[in-house]
Image (tube, rainbow, N blue to C red; front, top):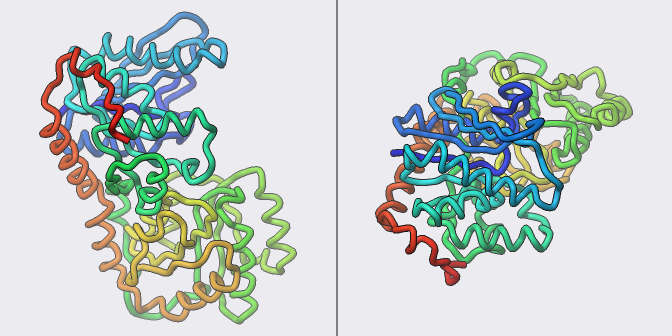
Length: 395
């Protein structure tokens, strides 16, 4: 099947170097996995990184045909319309000759690019929502975009059960849950021996960034309670950010700075190594629509603790970890102590196996392929005239 991926934002393929930021990394990983599964995948995006004129570039990114427009930005009020027009132009120039069967847009703003292409050329589109911003109060113009985009799509997907519930504010359509996937490399790491002498100290890991949404201030307080209760443990915080110095001061004021390691930004390979070496991954987020690092820890057979955010019911079950209330220092400390006391009861092989069945590349791509074929069965190739009829009744 020929699939065109259209992301709302994308940090790869810019003129300043491939992979200059990790924005849209989940879109890229899914596109690569679909290509590995046998689909013909292209990805289209406009980068405002040009000095003058417009340049069209095509690259091969691990089996995905990346089509990037490099253009000089105009004034802010017209940049959005300019990007829409550039997307239509690039589709006509580079994609139409390899006409896709389906368009997969990522995040509600991408519907502004997917919808006109879908209507002009009669290609159905599905949209996956990832963004936690929809859980808050969007500006009016973006609420309208979200409602319109979801209403016009041929299928609406969300990455977690909680986010699917949030989307009910914007659409009466049925929202399907398709989670983000875990790269296959995480399913090949060594597993902790299910039984045997426990190493000391116990090692807790949290991968994220120094930002209030990640709740590391709460985690530090909980960890201090844990240590002061007599548990021999260390905490590794993996991620950078402007608030790291404040968190280091909190750690010192709690008297646990000798047991807390601030590791800063760490690349993906070293994240995997840290997860292999830890005993439990902890996520104390105040807001989280998914949290791929939790699932990566599960792929390595590690139990997890996470707060009751949108993603909790999608990821955590009674065999792989614990869910705690958001911002509750005492309950998080008690949960960390419970993990310390019952670590040997968690079956690493079973955790990995269940994770693979739900979050592996093969599992996610199989679900997506089913949805694509279902959409195509309901949408035979439309003529250009038919495709221009807005579906106002689909909210």
